[in-house]
Image (cartoon, rainbow over all chains, first blue to last red; front, side, top):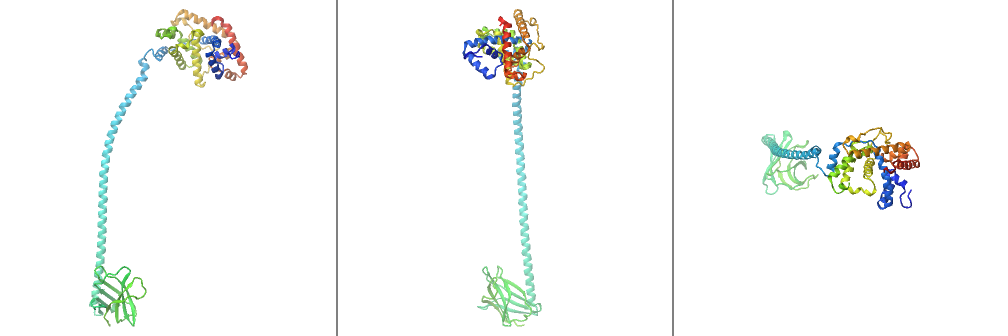
Length: 281
Length: 183
């Protein structure tokens, strides 16, 4: 136990042999550093305890330990064998540099290859673009062909219509009337009644184009009534060719007029702008 | 040591040659591993060279100080490794442990007078230890060579702490008496 604030011999023994808990050991170490009396007590205990080390069987220290101690103390340079790890490390470093250089060179070569491939890729893209462009052109040509075919078909249809109209006008069973304007009585077309086919043809030209929402309408007058034969519009050249089958029971008429009506109107509202001379079968 | 303290490399070489085996034997005794013991012994000598002022002649003999430093360095190693070192099959009790190192110091080419003095000291210490009761010798060995605290020894031996303390104190008293003025 401690004597006052000092260390007694028994505690010094415990301290010297190292059997105290770390905290107490540390406290004693601090005290001994500043207390000469206690330091002497502890030193005496340590002298005794240190002798215990002599009880250990004596072993020969490894021969290389001397060199290692001298090197560790800075009194000798490491031998080549001992320096092998450092040399190997340096060699590894140099090798790493070479590898890095080689890798760099490889990287440049690879970059060059990448550039070549990128160039080829661009060329291929240009070719694909050309092909796409050609496809577009072919598609446009096809469209134009289709449009041309539609025009041809339309013209054929018109020609067929004109041909039929011509046949109707030349037929002995047909009656042709002149269509004139209400004012000035100038002729703008013909009205053909094809009795054996129960068809009526209306042909006119120099018709003015109508604004959107308006349409021409043909009316037949017979038995005291006007009967609508339908609406029509002129083309860009002001022409209109119009064919209708007449309804059953309508076997004669005493006149015909053309009016301008609102699209969708259910009854006649417009004034007559053209009329046909009485055509009597 | 005075020459070592002023940077005499030749003197340091002599100190090493004289004490290397003792230091190594001590660290080996504690650590039970040749590689670790060698590392610890190297540290002890390097410390002597780098900090010779650590030894204060007025506080005791150089040999005692050196052995204490060696033992403490080895115990620090054990504690830093959390006692993971395995020392199976080897008793910490130097009397019971018949493991041998070499015993014939006279053939090692060291100072014969020193070798004889060392031999005499070894015989005296072993005799003092052999005279101790086995239980007391055991706790001293566990403390000194094993680095165990009294608390740890009590746990290991399944003995009360007070019993362990008593054994340490009695063992130390008898050891001091046996070694007498040899210290």
